[in-house]
Amino acid sequence: MEPRLRIWITGALCVALLAGCGEDDGSGDDAASGDAWRPDPSVPTEVGSDGFTPPGAVLSLGDTATVPLLEEGFMDDPDVTGALEVSVTGAPVQGSAADLPTDGPFADDRQGTPYYVTFTAKNVGDAPLEGLLLRLQGVDSEGESLDSLASSDFPECAGGIPQSFAAGESATTCSVVLVEDDALAAVGYVEAADYEDSPVLWDLT
Image 1 (tube, helix red, strand yellow):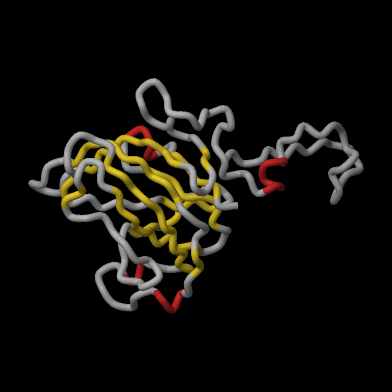
Image 2 (tube, helix red, strand yellow):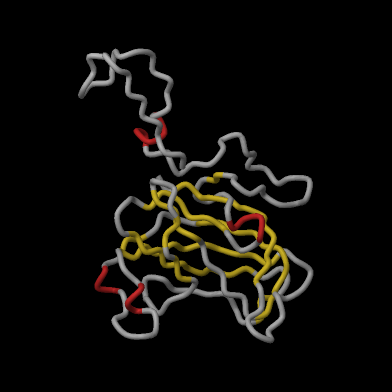
């Protein structure tokens, strides 16, 4: 997340090898181990007093997060609010750049290798959710957000949320994450204000 600080010491006889040139403060450990994407490890993974998994929690595949939902309405559509249980059920499936559509309004913006991430969602609120479009945000090994699609026509990414998602109902759906340079490290839930900048993450490493 934070860039590594490089300290140059005048007169030191260390040009290429840093080992043995003073004490190791461990500042490069995260980058070296591929954990630069991980948020604060002290964030608990248990549901808090508000009934929700806290923003910034890191879960394993198969773990369930209980999260609030706020999907702002488009134009005259009303906001969609509620609560969900979300679980990433398996490792992402790597597709091919050839899978990406070559026509449509956003075709030119879709670059990289698609990864298909299957997950389940359960409406644990008190009311049905209408017209819910749910996606998980990809995060690469450097902690950068990746382009993610909430739905697709790809056969490898089947499933979807019903137009009227009843209270107590569960569904299996899929997100397409586009990966370019760095490896896909995690996917996260971002569909509420407190989670946009600090998502609940599922570790894919």
